[in-house]
Length: 500
Image 1 (cartoon, rainbow, N blue to C red):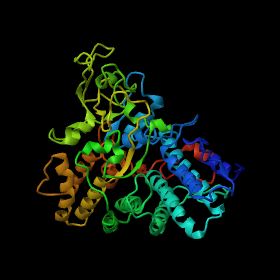
Image 2 (cartoon, rainbow, N blue to C red; image 1 turned 135 degrees about the vertical axis):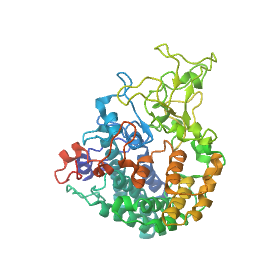
Image 3 (cartoon, one colour; image 1 turned 180 degrees about the horizontal axis):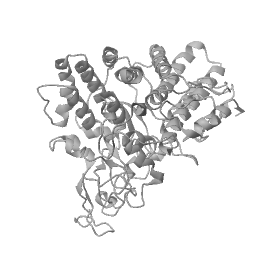
Image 4 (cartoon, rainbow, N blue to C red; image 1 turned 90 degrees about the horizontal axis):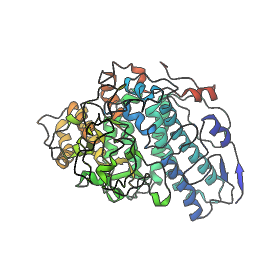
């Protein structure tokens, strides 16, 4: 087919966006007006927008949502996880230590990866909207397509609002000008309007891994839950209103069914990023980033399991925050690691036993076996490096927890109990007589361990700014990250976030 090169080339250069996509679409090119006029062609175009959720890698940075940059950034600046330097491994210019200590700078590659992941997804969607604009479809036919695409774009902008605050809003594929910062309030308003405008045209049914009314309501609930942290205006009741519009989901009785290889079957998952190694998807290797190099021996007697990188682990205190009776505690791998072939504890090259300990000596000098490891997603014999489980983005437990938190914040803790009861009962835990924000905060930690959302919770509860393991008091300006230095170099119209 005929291909037209457009202004997107300049936009992609502006944001140092890669021209690589999992589905082989090029981000700096769009098909001409002869494409996108049939249902099949439209599905192909919109499918490209969803494929951007899986991210990409190039010579500049790793930009997969599950990788040691994008996912680990939000985890390692929270009170949940850390990537300690182990000997000569995992130093990488000190970027992980800086994340732990809250001393990051604008040249941290993790921050660049988060920026590029989101803006690449936005650029892809803008190019598809342009193609739909040029198609011969009727306005009536275009409306639900625009709604789905703009709601997905709002997801990326929500991430940027949360992470960076004062970011450029770029929606016009043909605009070649260099954009300036929008204020955080302007980005907030943009996300809200895009989602509310899309709602009348979105699918009302439960559709797995697609932008539906339920997903839009969930994103608006997140926006309103964090409104006070984002723009200084509390909107607890608005969050409740959105949660109460969500329907068709329930908690799966088995907590870990949400993280099984075939987790698309869970009735709890509202939105996920699908992966299927047989279909050629790439980037879903998070399960190989945490456990010890020899951990494969605990999964398979023949070591038929991918190599592990011995990276991210829980911060000291997280594992012991769980009661032993809490079923969710199994989301972490701790203690002696048994070789399936011998039945004995694995011995590391140092001659010591591979026993994962909660203690970590320091973020700058940890032993190979220190730190409790991520074990939430299923690990099984015969897996490939690219896992087949889908990455969970939103699940119904979050909707229940948001309602509970809002009722507590509005001074009605008794109204929170029915929502909390569903979550704690599944975990096998009892609720205390008094429901307060501290209890909510700890339940969020235990329910969503290693799901990439703890930083946002820390900021909303104010704990982000308090000292914790290997971190002193954090300055308020670090509630958002700096705009990456390479982006500022490319676009002189952008100003750095305050404090940086």
